[in-house]
Image (cartoon, rainbow, N blue to C red; front, side, top):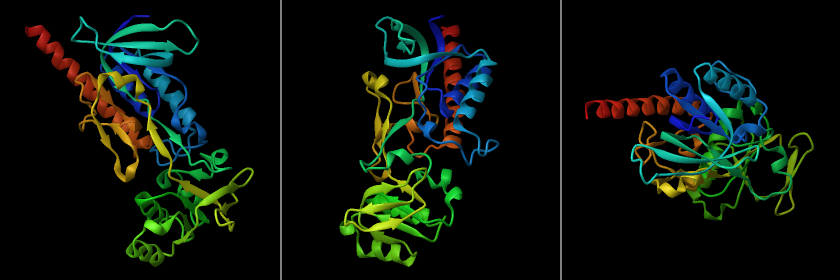
Length: 314
């Protein structure tokens, strides 16, 4: 494998493939490294993706990879152990790759890196919850709300995001129950929920259902019949591979965690590292990630052109 690249893209989800496609069409020499575990692998269909409504996520990824390969993009199945600055190459980065097949780690050199590794979801530790993740235990009403419209919907969340999620999900159904500890809510918060017909009940202790969610048992032992649950997961950006670069981070709203901080074009605090998709934006669903990747791909190419001009006139 050629070990000198214009760009190495880490992650072959919607953001990474979109960035790679843009760079390939700019005639850049690009490698995509992917571990094969996309965040949306638990879902059977995608929604609100223009031109791909209802398409399985795996099919979008397969099409994206095939399209990228038309422009000479190369792929490696594996993970990135670390990205680091070489001691003798100010114009490059070193990427240490661990192939999925178990071969010895390989050291690659690239002028730029695109981090598109996404996030992992840590679900509340509630019996029966994880088995329905991606089917009737959901995280995004824009992605799944239409499919459960007018059904009996529950929300498992805490703190400020609980109020936001409850009022948002109410747009898709008049029958919404927020399962949470309301002791920290103001009277104004409770009045706003009541005004929209959203009831509050004790936190969930167990989720029922075989093929789909059918109900929950609460911590006060009450039971409630439901058709679907929206859940506040704890998102963990999969950015350990660039931890050694000391990139700037930013706290996401509603206590959702710390994410890589970027400028509007996706550039991080390192001039040769960009980030696209969920790894820098917790709100990035598939269409947002596609746009993010395209933006980053164009930005990386523009930066490479600037450096090439500077080198030519030096």
